[in-house]
Image 1 (cartoon, rainbow, N blue to C red):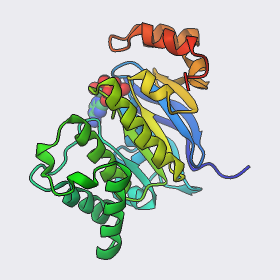
Image 2 (cartoon, helix red, strand yellow):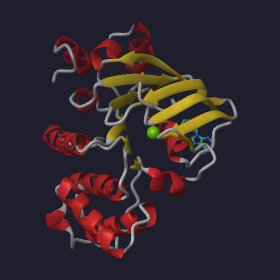
Image 3 (cartoon, rainbow, N blue to C red):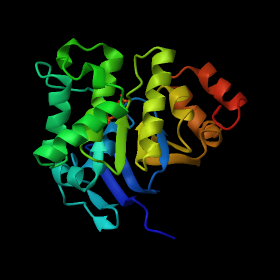
Image 4 (cartoon, rainbow, N blue to C red):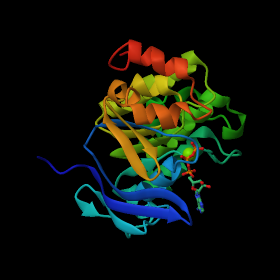
Amino acid sequence: MSTPLLELDHVTKRFGRVVIAEDLSFSVGAADTVGIVGPNGAGKTSLFGLISGDLAPGAGQVRFAGRNVTRLDSSARCRLGIGRTYQVPRPFTDMTVFENVLVAAQQGGGLRRKASYAAAARALGMTGMAGEANVPAGRLGLLARKRLEIARALATGPQLLLLDEVAGGLTDPEVTVLVEIIRGINAEGVAVIWIEHVVRALTSLVDRMTCLYGGEFIGDGTPAQVLATPRVREVYLGSEIVDASTIEAVLEEGEGGR
Ligand SMILES: Nc1ncnc2c1ncn2[C@@H]1O[C@H](COP(=O)(O)OP(=O)(O)OP(=O)(O)O)[C@@H](O)[C@H]1O
Ligand SMILES: [Mg+2]
């Protein structure tokens, strides 16, 4: 078997009494698509921090492309190919869309001038933002802001893209647009781990799903398998955000309604 792209090996992380990861092991292969659900405050964003290097684990190892990256900071990991979006995006609002993406290619991806322009242009093309390249980021509507957030991560040249709740607040047609953008990125060979409360968006894309709760992953299988797991239903359907009828509909459609 080939080496997985990302491996969490017995990772533990706590903030005082809050358990983010408890002896957590998990691996993701090249070009995989994995969805992570879990109630508010379960530690999903913090888990991304452990993968991207914004947070250091208390114990355990993070490996990327066969290399131990546990002690590398987020900029070093980004250069190795781990790109992420943020749940609360903070684009440079006075800068244009193109400038924002260019900064990501240069600072995050470590690309030099010519290569950075090419990476920025490509990222805008793949996210459907080429037409808004010269618009100040502060003037964008919600869907365009989400596209820009993905474009910034993409411009760094990731092999692994971490998406943190990019579908929140969008209408159904907008969610469809976003899913197609992410599908296109994955089709280029980029692995995707997507944290999302909009379950229908997740299930329309990912092959594999899991639920983070109490520092552990509950269930690891197809979206339909995981959403049908009694423990997942117990901890997740009890959370305020998720609409139970959505999950029922997904289950009725079988394998994620694809
Ligand atoms: N740097 C930090 N220091 C201390 N506690 C933190 C820190 N970051 C997060 N936490 C706590 O860890 C817990 C998990 O937070 P996190 O944001 O990772 O959850 P989440 O699953 O992403 O939630 P949501 O679905 O609301 O986005 C919360 O109780 C939060 O307050
Ligand atoms: Mg979060």
